[in-house]
Length: 301
Ligand SMILES: [Fe+2]
Image (cartoon, rainbow, N blue to C red; front, side, top):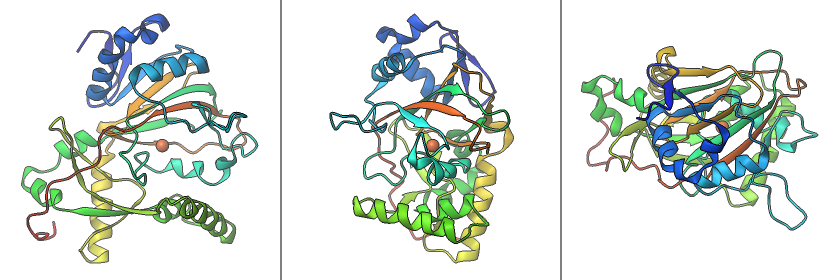
């Protein structure tokens, strides 16, 4: 890997040592993509891209999913505003609060999950608001060799409701009502709130990673208590400090991650803090596929 990337931890994340012009030059796109897959997370410290520049940077690396505000011509802005202030983003009060739990973006989409996401720090919170990443490749690699085959035979049912509950254990009636509204809106647009995935993703590259997160409801086909214990054990394994990078933001930082090889979460912060991130996300190019299920689930570990 080029010496333009300096690892920030031994297992995940690197700082890109390049100026704005180099970062925006399409000639460097393949190298940046390769570095992203290698390190999982790339940081461009205080590079200070404005929205147009972030769109150029993102378009060099893939195709942006337009998720921002609806524009007068009926299209959506490519830049999505991450804030908990409902005046700035109506999803802030319900949906975005779930981002405090570990997750992979787009696990419920019909197509492949997003390829990569870029965030520019615009305004920060006085406390909290750090973004954390763990390497799901490292999580797989670090499993005991003798257990890998068993884990590869497992499938997990992911549920949006499990996500909501895991981030709001003391939810009241108001929260319940909010969930129902979000679920109903998703259902109306034909999107499901549940989806099954293999625990181990076999990537085209030959690498393997774990597919987990706060939406993991249960392991298919094993008793509930055993399933819950297994998910907790694997989650603890996948989020050990030595495979986590915690980003302490400075305004103007650009942070991007390989959504197929990491889980991420934000450390809780005050919703009225004004914290604002501008996000662009790239369409996924690879579906989550596991090993063919050629044998029944083996004994529990
Ligand atoms: Fe996310």
